[in-house]
Length: 350
Image 1: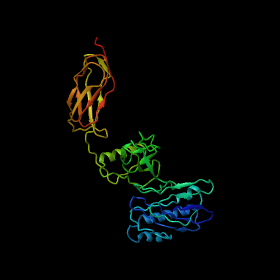
Image 2: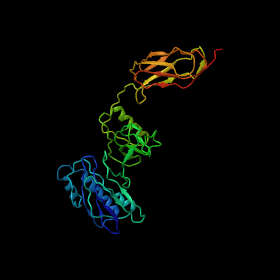
Image 3: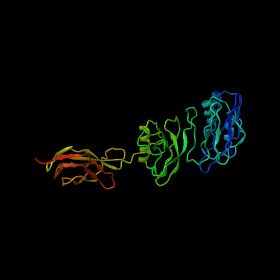
Image 4: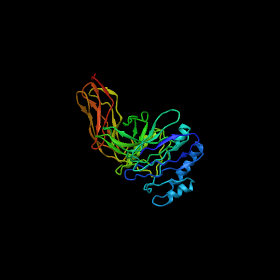
């Protein structure tokens, strides 16, 4: 069923509570609750008090209805008992957006809201649809920024891989390389490796308070910390309810000292690589074996091979190339991400 909102001068501003569309908890909370003779700004403040009262209600008893009564509004009908801990924000921001008063025509929100709610502004003649007809994996909230919607149901294209909560997304819902391209944040972890999947995203610039990112049960502390690190780099403030502890496990090899050149058959000085964790910190306790090999060009490498790291540092003190050319080196260790050096230019022996 579609519920249509038609703005009228000096009409009632009706309170609507949107459906909580978690997969098995479809809730239709209210048919109609008129608020008479109030200006839009007053009604918005009034709605906030109702929302806050309902948020404090305990599911499973009469406190939901009591909260509405306490907020001095009328609850025409509670279609089903509240089964979720979240009560969603009301659609009062629309009054501010259009500076109009809105009346809810007869209708009801039932069975997970199978149809969109259509909103017809008075002047522009534009149709705006608030879609509530799909299953979402998180609540659909209004932010504190003029009642704009903070979450949206999106489809992530196939081939994006396993994405953790907090992944930055571009406008086309693909993974953003950095914060400069990001316009939204993935709310819950999804696997888009082989096929497109539905997901929930939060607008990057939404003023949302009290949001909780939805982590898959097997998400590691390091993965959570990495996701939040990317959000912070994009200017999104994150507050932990319980701060995960970094594992400190070795993850990658990184060259920290490589000569830029030298002569064939002559030592070009020490080459140094560090064993680092996923955050780029030196793993001081690592004694892993790291192997240095020549990646490109002819000739042979002397002084490379396997070296045991000392406190996470692998050093090859005397390395030389048998022939002239432009070379790169690779440092690798079992189970860790390898690293390739910058180019080294070797001239012919004098």
